[in-house]
Image 1 (cartoon, rainbow, N blue to C red):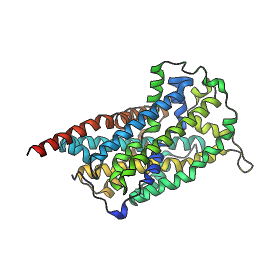
Image 2: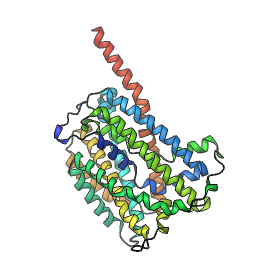
Image 3: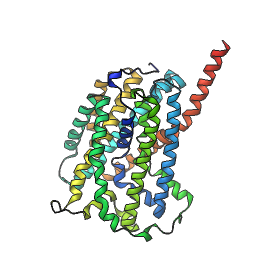
Length: 370
């Protein structure tokens, strides 16, 4: 496998679009229920947990940028082969591909459940899955530029949903946040860990880097993306904690979507139903990017044709979603995936950076001594 990935200029993207790709990959089904998960650990200090997670995320992205700067145009599968050798590098690459496959299943299952609860209770899972997978496969077949274009357009098309939360903001109660720092540091750290599922996705930087034209600006775009995600998540958590009481919040599964229930317009009494339908535009970039990451990694590791891997992955995903029958199974799978994602996105880059530096230092030393 080639370490450096030479990408034709015609399919390269500007670093400006890395912001939208990373941000839309992060924001998806996780943000619908993030407040409940963090509140269960950190209570009224959940907003502090978000800030802690945001700082850690920024540090991880910084390490990713430093790793990529050691290579002219390499992605993570190539870097792993270069650092750890062919056998271990391919093994780690396979784990990454399976992780993205699992992430796609998780997003599919969670959004299909939302559709069945809010919109069509009797619609079969396989039908919704088939529809969503058709869109995902069609977009991935278009290549990186189409994927980035979808991320940009869907970001612009859904960012206005934040404006309609003015009603819950006007009904917030300040005493829901008191006492500040009333929980232990371990509770706040536990809350930060529970943000993992909602924040993973920024590791796409390690894969999209060879496709970026002006690579020097890619790191800044990635940092701005994770900052935007942190601020968005912070806003959502603060609004939900301020609007719902503690016991209410602990009982809700999707508190973010539940807030849309009180919003009414003259042309739409149930805006929450419209919001769930529009949420497909939020979730689709998640699924499209995860599918591209999965198929791209298998292609890089095993030299397979990405189109063939895409079709096989789509069939496996279709049958894989049928295996999960109830909410408990989906929750258990999502929790395990979030734990794996924590180590891949938040821990692995911090550990990998000094290893890459050491390997390159030894390589330069040997080159000078010869």
